[in-house]
Image (tube, rainbow, N blue to C red; front, side, top):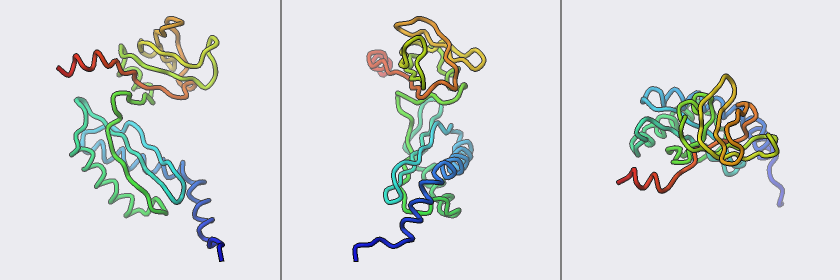
Length: 178
């Protein structure tokens, strides 16, 4: 009494050990489906524990994604994930747009959003700071160029970036919406 069956622990350990493998395969599936629909896969995250898994998929396209885009990708991806039995536990699938504060992952993202305000956090300090906020100036090889509000223009190695997002200027967005 009170003891969990051994298979539960084995399943939990298997999922936690293979999260990266599941993410990589799910990402390939989602990328293929998104491209078929004329969409871009921005990010994919498998979060939670074996008892409470959520697969988050972020898609985008020029002009933004619609609810129909999200529903279509969700339906097709769900069918493929289930057919391949990729995730060996119950999970929740969420498909959405990346939002106004879209994450920036690839070097192409930084080039694409040149001239936009962004926030960058690095793994280790650069010139005494890890958080940078300013205008993306483009890309120079493997370096992301940003005109930081406090330090001016600097190049950050793409591999040194822990997290990067577009920064939302709410006043500009409100004006654009009118």
